[in-house]
Length: 408
Ligand code: ASP
Image (cartoon, rainbow, N blue to C red; front, side, top):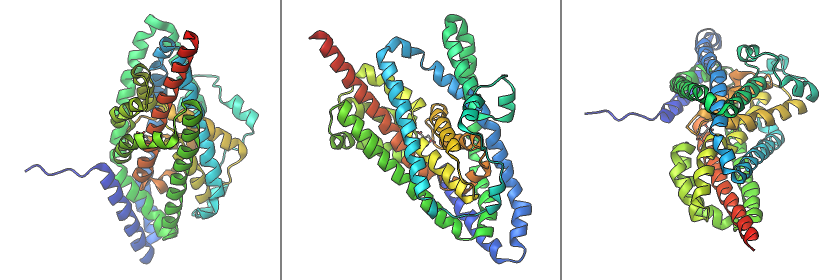
């Protein structure tokens, strides 16, 4: 008889429980903490190294592929422009909400490693940050994981391929193929998460005890409050003012897709539902068939909220105060990371590594939130697809009104 396989999320959750139990045991036995640091931590480091290793290829290929997938933007003209403006603006607002909320709630986050205050944080001022976005050579940013520069390289490569037209086809295919390959490598690394969670959590729990658990409850709560505020504020407001639809009717019609997203944690997997709900709300087929798949690839407001909240949480755990310049950098990177985040479970967590690197926060901090990533992911995916559908409905209505005006 074929054994039923436990889903990865269940394994990761089991890893979380095992890591906590192991940590508590090690806390109680003599020399347990030293043992955890010497013999368990290194395996956590291996997992983190693998995550860091895959971030640059994922960012380069997925953002470039994201830009290439917009080759239709020109074809669809004003629909494309409206869609892009809506996607980028709502994502940037999402990060701002997340950063404000998490900063307000900072008192709820535990200080786990005060030595982190001496961590070499990126303290550049805004002008330096802006200048620092633009690479002066194409290799160093990739080798040093200078994320903002890597994003610029990916965007330029994508636009270059688009502008090259027919002659850029081969490059486009190469990028799309490598994008698939790096996604597969990411899948393999994510499969190691349960072990990674144990090895990263046990030493932290051994040292800090239940303080971490209280912190995890707090950061989850803040992220979910952020998701709800974003939905109620941004989607309600834009649906009401731009599409002239009652927000209540919108959310009611969205229930099937939202439930599917919540349970699958995959925007791509939820796409048929998102399409159906958007069309039921009056989105034209030709608009939604462009807007929704593009959104499942490049629009991730929930993921952006999660990244903003987690960045502040991790900084707080390490006793680091984020400067205004760092916050701006997080808004920028998280908005762009949204383009590079695949609509599959767990992708946002890998991109969190990029956001942390961009402001010089310790990537090891991901270990703190990784065990409960699925819980974050369910909420963020629900917000991600709601944004896609809202955009499809709004752009459809705006186009309808434009056509009606032109006809009269
Ligand atoms: N699971 C999310 C989605 O499919 C992406 C993420 O991991 O943030 O939309």
